[in-house]
Image (tube, rainbow, N blue to C red; front, side, top):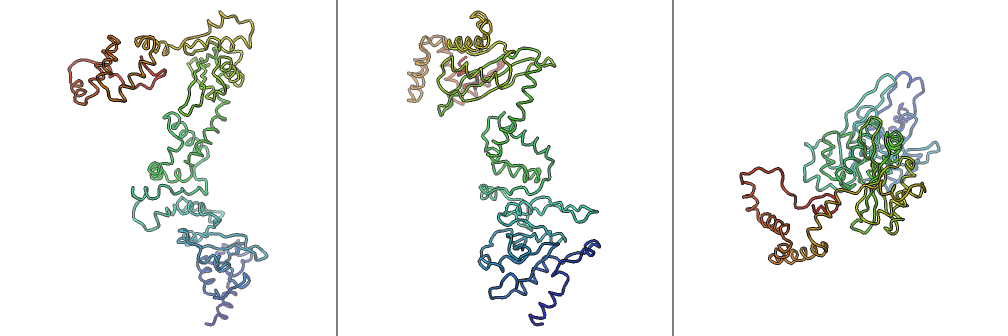
Amino acid sequence: MSETAIKGSLASSPSSSPPPPAFSRLGFRFKAIVKQYDAALTLASTADSSVDDLYKIIWGQRRFVIASLLDKRKSRGRRNWIGNHGWFLAELRKDNTSSGDIWCCRLCDDKGAPRFFNAQSTSSASAHLFKFVVLAISRLSLTAFRAHRITETLEAGSSGDPSVLDLQRNGSEKRPASSSLLLPRAKMARIRELSVGYIIDSNLPFTTFESTYLQELFRQLNSDLYAQVPWGRTSTKKDLEDILVSKKAAVKEELDNAVTQIHLSFDLWTSPNRLAFISIFGHFIDRRHLYQSRLLAFKRQIGSHASENIAYTIRNVIRDWGIDCKLGVSICDNAASNDVCLRNLYTTPDASITRADTEARRMRCFGHILNLVAQAFYGDDAASFELQSEAYDMLERVEEDLEHWRAKGPVGKLHNIVKFIRASPQRTEAGDQLDFPRTATMASRCKGRHQSLF
């Protein structure tokens, strides 16, 4: 058959133009995209052709031509892996100009319901190839196709899941973006909230969920969860900010409904990169008569650490939460500057409060008291004593360090005994085998507050 005859035959077929509305109401099925695509390739001319000369692929009211035929420059540029599972088309407007490139899924076309995705990026198409796809076939039925379960590293027909080596090789690749909502929004919000809670409670970095192995574990447990929930550090940081906004109203309601005054505890901390932070907690009994503790602020302490400046920061936090009239006692360490800080904090809003009233509203941190007691065993200059011991340890001058501690009396001798036992795995094992009751093992480095010298 000549090329002219083929063109005439195809042009007269129902697929070359949209069917009348009556056919669609009777359940008319359009010709599969694959057949129209093959026909378009058959009729393609080797010479440059205008859009009017190209065979039109039609689905519903949409018209397409093969993208590489419309623009010869694209014929060698489509090397993306999703091209193995579909076709790149150019969608046409009514005036036969291109509105942009489209990717059509071949696997969905085989089921009689082709799906089209914007081809400017491959994220939507990649997610579609992997995820569970729900397609409405008619007004009377809803057909659910199980996911194609295809990824760039796990093509259709491959055996099994990616190995650990595959995960290492592809650990830096981006995860496909979600193209449809498969999990309920409420469940997604709860999952993201729990994820942020886990990071905060365990003191982990925002990059925790970017681990290749952890993401593969999620994919094995629930592929829809893996594909839909964003796990990157930027998303996690934004989730934290959103949770802070949404939960602040709930915390404020708790403070308003507290049956007691709101008692404060605060402390300052300097980070390794020399940034000063202040944390402020509120403690109260709620209307169910249960003790509650809420973090009211963890923010940069700008400027000097003068008592007046710290009092100004705390006062702004109190006003922000609206608890000025419910302020109770304050718990802080034994620094003398805190006397002035609390005097400014209490007397500024209420000039009738006396110095004695301020002292009555101050509770001293018991942990800091124990810390001071422990430091007293070191003598007047505890800081210098510790620095000297650290210097001996760094220079591996063991005997001099032992003599340095022995000079401190019973506490120093006890320190040397513990260090002697812990310096050898064999001596530690021998101590474990001794037959005598014990309730605990002393930790060499405690993560408590105030350096935990007690």
